[in-house]
Image (cartoon, rainbow, N blue to C red; front, side, top):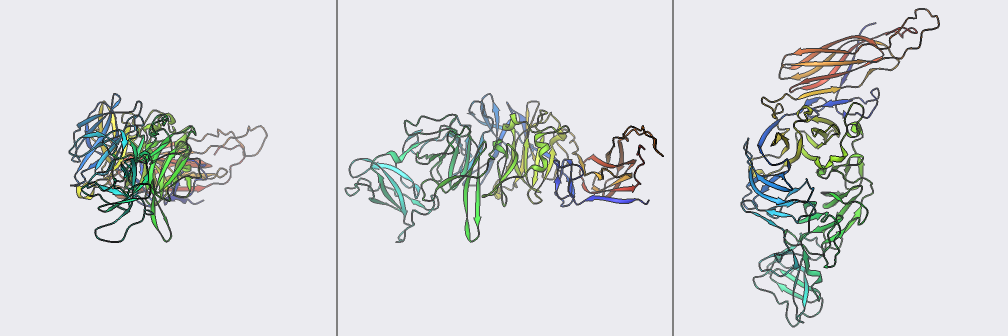
Length: 640
């Protein structure tokens, strides 16, 4: 019989490790490492890394971001490292290879290892866990703990001159009855215009500036609720003849913070519920909102319990934009607990504010795995794997790579006891969600990569899975465009008491944690060739690739075996059978060329066969061709 060519190409579905080897769909592979879908329809070896900052630090880097000067748009890259129960905050430069410069040591909640940096209202907010009140940092300035609008940890909000207030903001002043009463901004007038803007507008969307002198809160006609006072661009209304509605208290902590709708939000604000005797309520299921554009204003009215006393706590937070046909996009806040998800619409104080539970039993277990991918939704890691919330539906998207998550005889699964060391970031080339999670073999090197265009998974093993270089943090740094520093996916590793921040997927060749850089080792395993009951002679495999550098391609071929019955009955042409045809490993050297066909001899007969191909260095794998000669069915008892 003549040879026929069996081709495997058009790799558009990524890794599908959860299916039987005979059932893997066309365009998918069973296993892969350090290959991405950058070239659509082919596998591209992932980029290496380049160090941006490095130094001997007291502990691992667990948070990084870029602080922005609100006036000049100048940037100061920041990194936070663990330091004996504290967070050591460092600055560094975008000019490689930068040293770290210590700015401040901040208190950290006991046992907390996942602080956050968030840019808000001209400063960088630093969350330090639910047992420590957050801090703020000003570029070129210093650090200070957040307060209320009166400069203390609690009290009442008082009026300030030349201050921006939004509709819904409240202050406590003395009214015409000499009572401490609560006044709220209800309307805004701009200049000499006779028009007003109604309170139905969202908080943060309408506001104005107060005057230079105290308005007439204590006028003789300002007695009783409903009376109004003009104040430059603002109109205040007396809403309560006591100070209750104007009280403030800074959160006692914040496990998670985010900038949303011109306000700072804190989620999971204390290790346990406070008693509320002073009107101050914080807890593991409490959501708090600051004043508009003011991290030092925390009205007590801006708080809510979310899933109180359900035995779980707030584990993640993200913003999301919901769009409907014919309706302008509106932003919402999404809260995650261990096994539940909630959507927050609007802000505290407006008419349509509400918190609703999403119809799902998937929450978030790896807090820093939460990322919003534009056009797709919010991706995070939960008890079933990776899930995507699109604003309406919540669905599992990682079934194809389930063995990489839960493990099997060949693959070490994710370690559920160390999910606090997991981090996610977005990449730009290709557009991906990338999440580094710890595995049960003790490593922190596996990066789960979800291609946002192809909607397919690939696996990257940082430093070729070396246990000596654990990933301790990941983030996409997004400075303003004036900085000349593009949005860059970065990771931090830790080895020998030295912490390093490296860029990834930015065109670098090789893992530069070593000198010279270690070539990126890659492998893939296409689906099985043949059928369980077939029989064929597998002559060779030819791998089509483009490689700019010389290398060695290794093919390991597993020839299928059959269990043979005992040959007790006489039958013509019968014979003994081992049932165990040999596996074959072959290698072929190739020169650097952008159009290569590398042939690997097999020379074995069997019912089916699969190959695992591996090499190192940059390249694009376009497909595999097998030369196969079908053979007649085997007589009873005969070996292959």
